[in-house]
Length: 284
Image 1 (tube, helix red, strand yellow):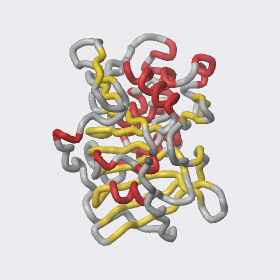
Image 2 (cartoon, one colour):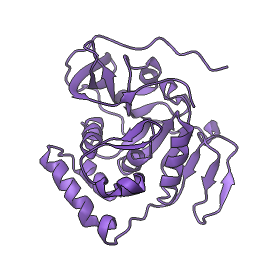
Image 3 (spheres, rainbow, N blue to C red):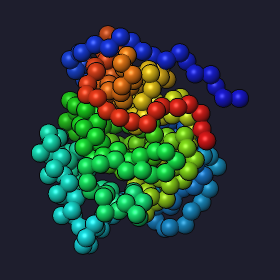
Image 4 (tube, helix red, strand yellow):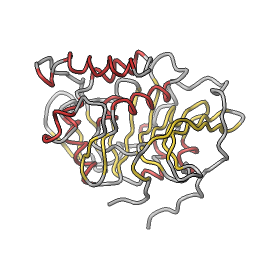
């Protein structure tokens, strides 16, 4: 039986300054008995052999290696994309470096590969999309606001094809990414397998429930928007943590929302209009 969801958290929208409390950089680590989240396989650090973990999910373990070839593999192609992002107003050096490090063309379908570095969203199957680079960079910059070094543990709602999780791997100590669609979870697992990212954990499950075993999170980012921010996300966010997600406003349109959890309470800030797929519960 699926656990019941708590009532959605939907405080009135208001503009607020960044939280006075210090953002957590490294929340308390998981206890040894917390287990490996989700999926069914673990890639060994020193070899390519795969062995079962006994739980759903995947942990990809080993340093990432980027190609230095020509064409879409060339660093120059990504550098041009990063230059455009900077010209559009993205100024966080760590976000720009992470966007330049991850080869976006490896996460899109072959038929669309020539559009991989254009500032556009692209279909990835099952009615879902990979967000355009500017939106990814903008949300990550908001997520990192006020943090000097790396973020601590981050929860991503909506793995999709795995691209944003790969970018997050450069910005956070640990990334827990949950996907409700089995087909996309499997696609992300294959896309990320060759990158061998030691700090990325893929989960198959209901994103509206979050992932309590990994909490508290220094940051939570969502790639789908609903009428309210699920209360589970707020509960799992660390004091001093920040959540960035699209949310449906009273007009019916979507806008980016930043939620800061402070010792005094929760502050919610409404930002620019965006367009994401709808947030849904359950798995399929």
